[in-house]
Image (cartoon, rainbow, N blue to C red; front, side):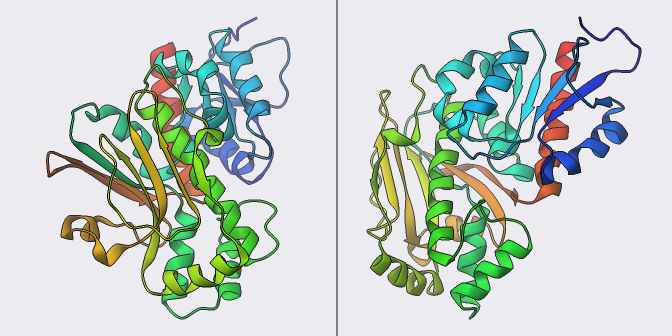
Length: 316
């Protein structure tokens, strides 16, 4: 039974940091009553604010349960859109799922890139999709030790759950980048062919590679992902990389590269600290340049609230 009261209702699934931060914002900024539990009365909108601790099955099931009832869903969870996009893409394309917070947070790179023309031939989209690796690199370059940089990242809440040391954190964030790369492709390009992380050729980061990577990060290397119509010639560090040629012949590659070797446009755009961003070049000309805060509760919930406004406007 759909809510028939004058004041709308929202259901928040997830009681962690994002869910806790989100609830008062929903009530204050959207004017909705946050339901304590899912009962017989259906909400007007659902927010999925759970962490990705599996490959997105839990979030996928929550999302499908409600969108199949005609209820819009806003999510910040990336596993469902990375591993199960084939099941969700109809609802993404139908504007039933708000997904901006799943990658890039407050930078809104997904929605901005989706509106942009990415189907013109001879394009390259360069992206920074993980603000933690960007932050760690900047702290190492500033003279911090790996442990100090790791503790600073944990202190501001931008580290993937479960990391016990610097090496685990870096490997976890590289996997996070791979998932977000899939989220980006699946939600922005909306092709007939969705991708998943296990489709990529990967070069794992070894113990010896960690030491080399620390030196490279201190010298200005950063994690960059490219989406190209043609294979790019960018030189990446040999470990921590991933690449894929999709069924519709898009070339995707990610890894740590020397930013100083990039173009002037690229260097002037490149996101700093905990920023994410995208730079699109078509036929040699910059046609889209976006960057903004990614991780942490404020920018993440900013994106979720913005998505909710759009979805509620369409569902009225």
